[in-house]
Length: 167
Ligand code: FES
Ligand code: FES
Image (cartoon, rainbow, N blue to C red):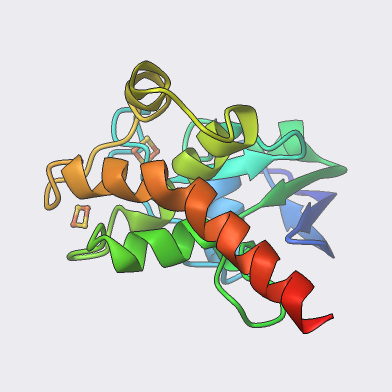
């Protein structure tokens, strides 16, 4: 199969690599760029463990997305949420509320939560249920995941307050 050269910016790093028409965005992340935080689950769009965020901060199922459609685009994966070696507030909330158990779904669940919080910084229960409907966690029953999402806003503001107090 013919290969073509494509570019993709992942977590603010630009990459150039060869891909073919059968490659998905998930294949490229895991096999070409060694970014294995994004998980391979059902590969049929049913579990959400492969979720990444597009440049608008929206969820994208990387297992269903042909890599070729992303030539020249930018995405964020779970590896890109930390800044200055500090976890993002939603990552800290997942730890604080015990929303991580076996951890297999966690990158996709967090990237879905991030997309939800990008759209609704303080989501209602209905918005949480709707925004997280596409991801499956077999360990937590989603109760702790929802606790973490409800507390993201508080943790984010605490971090901001601490940063302001240091200035
Ligand atoms: S691996 Fe993409 S939705 Fe399951
Ligand atoms: S933490 Fe195990 S599947 Fe979600």
